[in-house]
Length: 252
Image 1: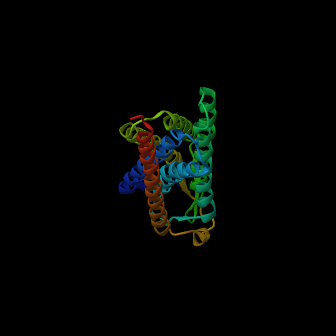
Image 2: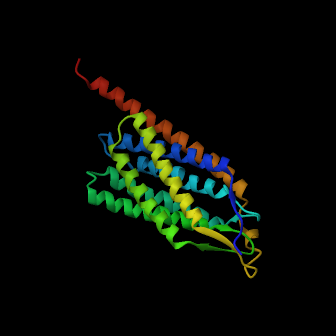
Image 3: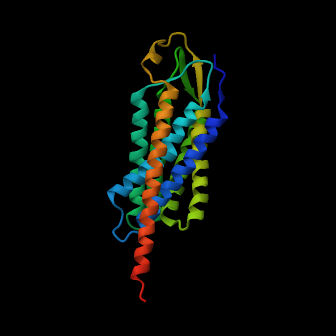
């Protein structure tokens, strides 16, 4: 029998705001990298991957998971949870490296978008497998799973294009909102594809080995916000220093 579920709309709204903040921070960092005369450095690629992959995508994903309300207690297995984080950050890091390293041709953009999008979708479903409840199984609607994959690929491709071609803070903020809508759209489509079904033969003790959702969620949210603020301050400082250097280099 399928279980009745609902959403905590405060957490849904919070997941969207996190996605906007993470996207804006990531776009600021990539904007700074592409304008640098020294080219992209490993430090800045890691910062962009942490902002986009760890903040805009994965933290949004986890808060969105916490928004999923059921009549039963939910736990999260630590192994798949943190493996999904690593997958998101590494995949986005590779995508950003491709985007900022040389001319981003259409073929290169589509290839990077396909790889990053599929990896992000893999992160989502791996993270969902970390969610456990006693006496239940997960079943998926294949059509909605397919739709979520398409959204992930399109969102990743657009994000990489924006990362290379954007100029101006206001434009980046608007683009961050668009990216957040796409990221949330992929996540909640994937959640809609999943149903929790009672299975009395399932292991009732599995939740004992899981982590408390609220404890884990509070830690992840605070850590992510701290990381995003640090990355944003660093990127804004880098852009400010670059503008000062350009003014000093101008002939009198």
